[in-house]
Length: 273
Image (cartoon, rainbow, N blue to C red):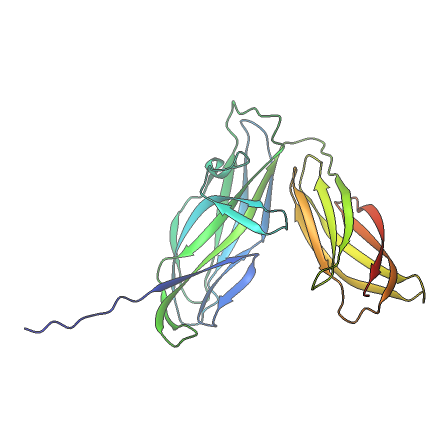
């Protein structure tokens, strides 16, 4: 009897962060909301928040699994992922859901209760904020084709971030520690911002360029940012290619927090020859 050789088919896991409506090649996807969940509880306390998971497909059911892992930002604000319990800031072990596995029919949504319980005896004054990431992973990959035309199996893994801080007052604080112009093949402005507070600090960065000779002003698009206590961030902003040669004053405005706190830094630099 002749046996037909079946070639194994690769499974491409597409990991998506940030959150909201997410799709892959218009074939399969997972939607999770809200994009971030916040807990304000201390030792011995519990808090439950609701997360909605949806299947946007019109014809494909999803078999899904919920898990928790760790995350942190790197110097540039990109996400770094770690196994649960790796980081000192991890709260992954404090989290639970009623069902770790569930199914969604095409177009169906499910509300999940995500409970966090801080251990009764937990004490660590040096870590003001704990974090984790909730992943929803597709367990039934769908047939697809990669960019080279090969048959593959496509599965989606989507995550949202979870944050915890203690009850009571908190003090968000960002400090601009350096602002410099770097003249290389692609000239950039580099803004160093440190989070010296005891809570997450989200906001936006605005940049203005004033030509000291002509008085012309160039306003660059605002950029959003997210930071955690202890973060030392470097923000690279590419100088526009059509910026004329000359001497400039760059003004960086960092606006953050619920109180819209503003920090400002200025830099004189010469652009071009």
